[in-house]
Image 1 (cartoon, rainbow, N blue to C red):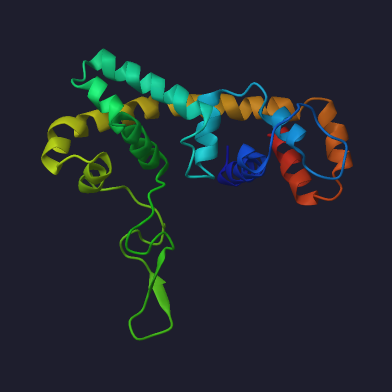
Image 2: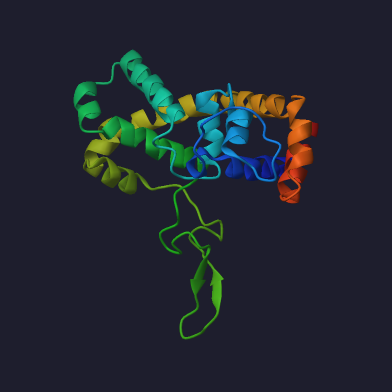
Length: 222
C-alpha cells in the first residue's frame, strides 16, 4: 500500500470514527449524508485490536475502545507468562494499563514534542517568524525519554530502569509482532464491507459528499 493510499484510508477512518456517531443500526443508507448506519456497516466484523490500531493513527485517545481492552488482556497474559513480579499491585495501581498506553504512543509515535508542543515550529526570538523545531525536526511527535515514562508510571527512574524498562521492551516487541497483521485484517474487512452490493446505492445516494465518495471508491479499488 502506498503512502497516498494509506492517507486515503486514514481519512476514511477519521470519517468513520464512532466517536462522532451513535451506531444504532447496520446497513448502508441511500440518503445524502454519511450516517451512523454507514459507520456500523463499514466497521462490522472488523478485528477489534486491528481497528484500534487504525484509529490510533488518526486519534491519539483510544483508551476506551474495545480493542484497547482486548489488547490489555493480552498484555496481562504476556506479563503472567514472563513471570513479572508484583503484577497484582501493578494492575491495581493502573501501571500496567499506563504501560500499554505509553507503548502504543511509542509504537505510533503519538507523543507530542515538549519543545514545540506538537506544532513542529518554534518562535524565533524577537521576531514574528517561526523556525522548524530542532528537537523533533518538525515532525511534531517524538519518542518519550525513559524519565518521562517513569513520571507517567509514578515510579522512580531507578525503579523504571530495574523493573519497567524491560517490560516496556517486551510490550513493544509484542506490538511490533501483532499490530501489523491485525491492522491489515481490519483494513481488508473494511474494504470487503465497502465492496458489498449495497455500497453502490450508498455511493450513488451520497451526492452531498463527493470527497468521501472519492475516498470510498479508492478504498474499494485497492
